[in-house]
Image 1 (cartoon, rainbow, N blue to C red):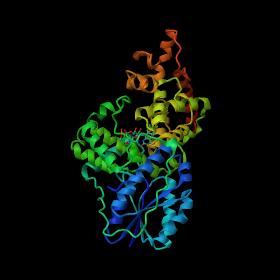
Image 2: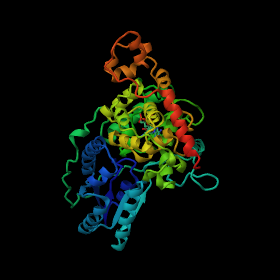
Image 3: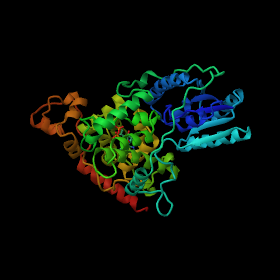
Image 4: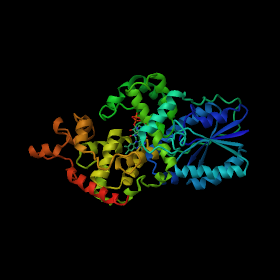
Length: 475
Ligand code: FAD
């Protein structure tokens, strides 16, 4: 028996259901596969940072697999379409009987799998897919009417009920194969780039490193998460999003770990419960993507919001991208994103809200930009986050509730510690004036090497409310 395990966003040996299943039969020869599809990645706006991170993770995975006598083969082709022929040729060459893979839930990926499954079927090759990237398979957490939840809280309640009554099962770690493989591994083409540099200390690219961060976070830091998680200067969230996005860790491993370490998580509010809830947000958006595939096609969930007349001012957009809006908290967040590929969740909300509600720029511009920069870019979470902030999604912030960036800044970065870290040009501005530096500078007759606010928040808010009101007439 020749078994092929097709790795995608599941770059790990532990709790990898496809790999475990492929390895059950001790006699089978197991071969791993990774596909490089640069044009497809470009169409999907995958950031250079995430690609570099993925490349580094593959180097580690290739070694882990080698130790288990599983060779890694690589196909390099333009798109999912051009992949089909090469995939079938590879199956033929290695006389593959069974293909194992973990599902991906985005539309193009699902279509790719359907086509490959059909081709395999014609050649009598059996394909087995597994749910891996969520706590529960999409479609398995439904309302009493058998529909996907459109509001997060009842969805979360339903997931918590399952988690508290059924043990989270993780797949077994495959053992070393009994025999050396007859297949020679491919040399891994280096698809990393110079533009995609990231801090490998903050984002170590291997399963073991991700797992030890999870353990450390769950043991020592999760308790304080409820109080600290909204304060960007504290930097006290798990920073596991990049590992979760490419599957160095599974959501189940995260949930299992925090439940084991904090057995009262279901009865007590606190850091562990709050963190578990964030993992459930991740599931919520993935389940939603399957229930509402139009979300993968840049469509808003609330169709009336497609009637909003956006201003789409290109100068404003560039100022936002570059972190030069004159609103320090927004600019600090955007510079953190540009320089590191990661942004604190509170700031993602503030920056997204600012683009849509203060600049009246189409949320899809922002979603696109985030995706090109983020090391943890993930269609479901990014789209969900943007549609939440833009009030175009399912469980979205009501459109009339508009963040005031200055109040957000005062509340979540009271001493301006985070702002000072990212905006050195505001060094001399005193703590209490940091949220509106120009008010202080003008009074002092000082010039700052910093942009003046590109809009006036109160006025921008009124314009946005009117644009939403107009669009709502199409409901
Ligand atoms: P923690 O606070 O430690 O949370 C643990 C894990 O839960 C995260 O690693 C993540 O996998 C998940 N999670 C937490 N919050 C959310 C959320 N609101 N939605 C979905 N999952 C969540 N997250 C991404 O992983 N990729 C994205 O592309 C992405 N884009 C976003 C865009 C916007 C506009 C917004 C508002 C949020 C976005 N998020 C995205 C969600 C969230 O900001 C990040 O997951 C979080 O900041 C990652 O940091 P962490 O790992 O320290 O999270």
